[in-house]
Length: 354
Length: 133
Image (tube, rainbow over the protein chains, first blue to last red):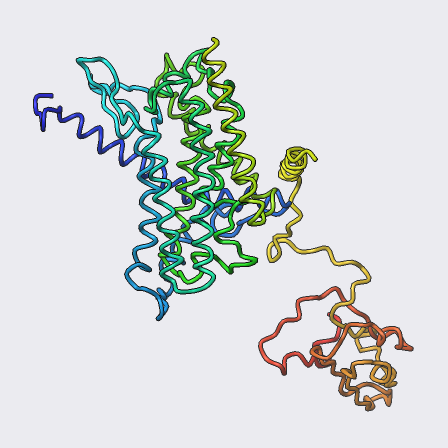
């Protein structure tokens, strides 16, 4: 490892590119097959079969959908504000993907004598012997997930259609209401951990044979955070921005072809990210039995936990009808925020006494 | 009222349903079981290698949709037969009155239910197409 660029060994750059590619491809494939899994799971929960025709048990369905959307006609409404209309799907999609950068998906692995932490925005300092990552990782994620709503609001406004505008407005109102409760829910976790760095948070959950998860210490916060995350990514039962029954298709009413597919991808990528974040903060990240001796088991546990939470998202979608708008606001402001505030106070009192 | 319990209840129901056998019928590859008394396409019964129909005109008389056209004639041994027997499947309401009315039990309803065609003329089923195979 003789060659150095900007004071960092060549291996650092190779590892970085490899990590970015692996994580990106993983998220993309998960997004593609999450649509398939969702249709299958909801189908079976409704005692149907779901897609069965394209490929064995419909396994090629996401590819068929992608090809279909790719070749559909691109329609830009004549009254739409063209630039904003075109750029909105990108603004929705990019934050959904770049959020994954700070999520640790495994421990430190060693390749050719070089230690690589399995987290994109992180590197292992051999002289200090520790991982350096974004020390405000959680703030970064909260910031990015708030940016995602700009794409939706912009799409709603630029479409110049009543339905789209209503969808966009609802999305922003919903995002603001639930971001608060979600933020307050994880504050109680950071009162325990004392750090905002996600790799440290995961490290702190490695006790008890890899089962010292924060969900056992903060079950209420975990529960509320997960529900608020569902609301933030506009999934059922909080999918009011695209409520078919009243808003046709909400903010994406006027979108077609690949631009519509981008909103769809953003929605599912957000689901992956939010599930990964919940796993990282509350379900011990990549920790689990035997991860200390077998570091490659870490990513396996991580992926398994993320997929489990995604299954829960789909399960909830198959079960619950959509909330009414005033019920949504009531739940956010009058139920979750007081509960999380009380949770913080109680955590503080216990932390002071113990 | 406890707001959590109904949600848990609903989740358990959906989870239970996920492991049930799906009711979906993979239609073109899987065929439905047609009931024995199903009223599908009509069939003209055959006995001694000729249609049993004697062209008595009871079926077009009883038909509420007026979709049956019969013309009587004679065959070589001077028996009364239907020279023309047509049912317009676009008008037929599949009530089965024609089968009930038939005095010589020459008509039946088969389990055949795939009656799609490409042109309107193809929906007028002639005697040859109605004769049971």
